[in-house]
Image 1 (spheres, one colour):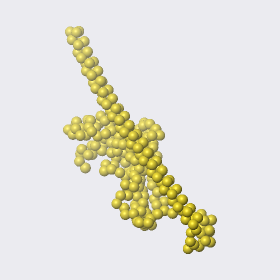
Image 2: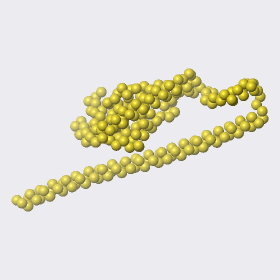
Image 3: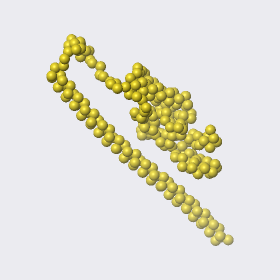
Image 4: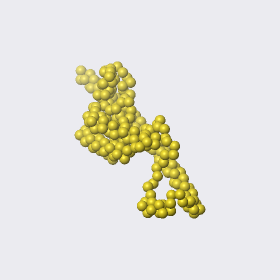
Length: 258
């Protein structure tokens, strides 16, 4: 690792309120203006970064559990035997343990534990491992979906079936496995199939609506963040102008006394 990369890693280990001045000083020291473009982490992202830097064993346990869970999902989609339940439980335990550590780290740093921050921490932990630079998160992550399983060949005909109740199983045994369905049963099956299709369409529409709302919320958040950055810059400029005016006043006052 180069000296610059090592120094950048150091930035993400600092208390959150020290990030920006230390970043700007490092960019000036190394004569690398691009370093000033590094984004200051959110509170949730900073907390997860501290887990990586200060509680590596807990972080590694979570990463290992996540990779195992994704591996079991790949097996399932490929039609292979999969111990998915145990993997899911191990992953939940690892996420819970990591979340408790991060809460403690945030409290020690004097950071507010708002519900939004804790939710963002939990979602980020569920998304790990992700990215090329662990320990340098700037924003919370969202849990991975099917993109985490890209490249997996799905076995044709793979489906999940509902386990029949004991009463249904007994009735099926009495009727015989090779019994021919009646016209009423076939009509009922068609009706159920239509109902499932309708429910699936409604589910997809709800999902699309939720995604639209999420995008709108994200756009609003980014707009607000930009406004805050502009306001912070304007405030910094105003303070600089004020300081210069004070210095000019002091010089004029001294000159008047002479």
